[in-house]
Amino acid sequence: MKRRDFFRQTAAATGLAASFPFFAGETGVQAAPVSVSPETRALREAILADLDAKRQETRLHMLPEDGQFVNLIVQLINAQQVLEIGTFHGYSSLWIAMGLEQTGGKLTTIEIDPERVKIALANLTKAGVANRVECLEGDAHQVAKTVSGPFDVALIDADKDRVDDYFQTLFPKLKPGGVILVNHVIAFKDLMQNYLDLVQKHPDLITSTVSPSMKDAFSLSFKKR
View 1 (spheres, one colour):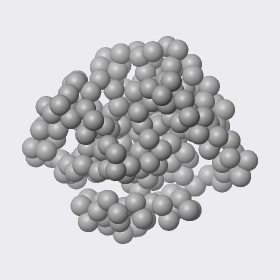
View 2 (cartoon, rainbow, N blue to C red; view 1 turned 90 degrees about the vertical axis):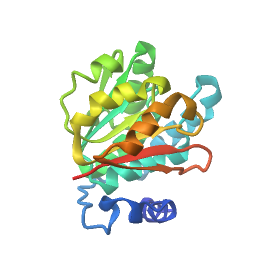
View 3 (cartoon, helix red, strand yellow; view 1 turned 45 degrees about the horizontal axis):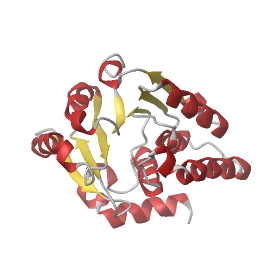
View 4 (cartoon, helix red, strand yellow; view 1 turned 180 degrees about the vertical axis):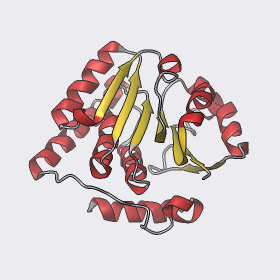
């Protein structure tokens, strides 16, 4: 399936087009796509497949459908600046960077584990997207306070019991019309209940739960313009 067809079908299947203002039509998508050779595309698919094959060994939780969905969001809102908390081995970072390759944007990603930073950077370099990624090492609760933003998309995939703390730091740095994505809100619902209650009641957010894989789900919050 072509990537653009995947975007349309996913948006329709999840009901996003009806739920969120930025999915109405295609007028907001102003992509400046980079041409990717078949060889590079195949290499990236191999890197993602290798990471996916090692998920039990490495305890990677993000599924391929999740990665595709984040890539979709990046392109649909023409994201220029994305912040990721929880780089791990660069699986979601690669999906994000491939989307940003089409919008001309950049990713800032934060990881506390030095060894994971090395692995992620190696994977991103091999995939040819390292020029679009700044990987910051350290405790994201502190490091996130030092990044200036503003961001179009923030993906939070770390410290499930402290997501609300990340939110307090990131919300002021999120552009109006921007999106906060938090993964695994079914599997770790109990740990994230404070955050889920917060975003559902927040007067400046429209929040919905979206499940690309039908196994777990994202909390997707749109910051009103």
